[in-house]
Amino acid sequence: MVKLSGVIQEMTGFITASSGAPVESDLVAAIVPMTSTPPDIKGIFDICLRGLEKNSVPFYIEVVSEIPKTVSLKNLGRVLKESFDPKASNVYKYMDYAGE
Image (tube, rainbow, N blue to C red; front, side, top):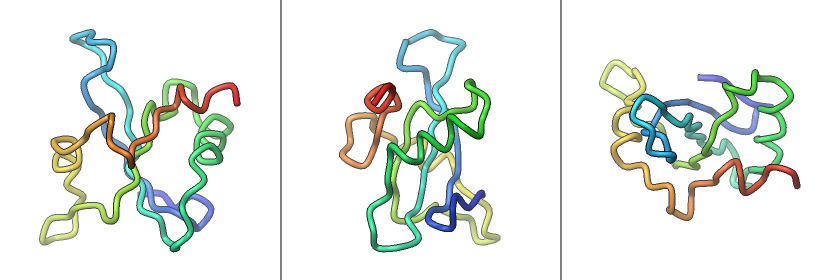
């Protein structure tokens, strides 16, 4: 888990590619806001673009209230993956913010 500017916690995972290609996947960053202020999604994408290689920039950002964990506090990424809905109101697609 990585803290981004002390504002969010971030966990990444992969989902089946929106392109439908069988061997590809889209990167999803599930974030938990650490304050009551809504996260600046465009700012998060911008930070990712500046600090990560292009293939590491998430295709989606999903804002969640918590990252599910096991009893031993390991992240349960599969739970987020199973419940992921790209059309949900808490999911933001990179292409909607690219070029702004």
